[in-house]
Length: 223
Image 1: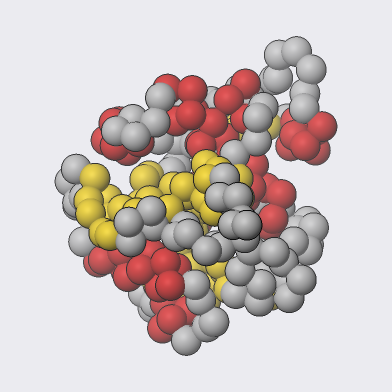
Image 2: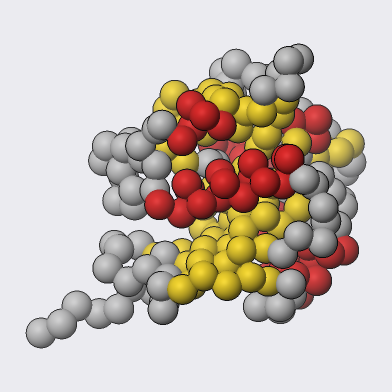
């Protein structure tokens, strides 16, 4: 008897960067718990699966038009919106940092957004750009079709000591790209770091988005 195939879930990940006063590039990373089903003990960027209600959450500002067009290559409008909301939500849930603007929510505020709304903010993806796409290969207990979004620290609001973080990721810190590469990372995180470094060196918006398709274990690009 063979195991049933693991369902592929859409997911969103946020890659946050900044530069020190001396120009040293840094990225925000945390460590997954040793008991995590997916990638235990690995250092990762904040992120997670898209929730069923993400497409219905108000969003004040979306990714740039080039990123939106590229996202639409493999997703409908509802999913493209949900991915952006999921990225903002996962950042908030895992780090206590916000991507939002002042505003009022209409209707009932979902429970997982209550604290966000209580601060007088609505989510905004205006500071995000589409950086990478990766599909988890077969053989994992959980599999994701993950879109990685990049944002600069300047777009953030929140406490940099991460005192509002719930602890889902431990050891949250801004590490240099050199330090990050020396951590215990998933293979695809190494690849994303290389792409981030290339973007920070040459921020050409026409640069294509890399795509690792774990279904066939092949790399391509999204133009």
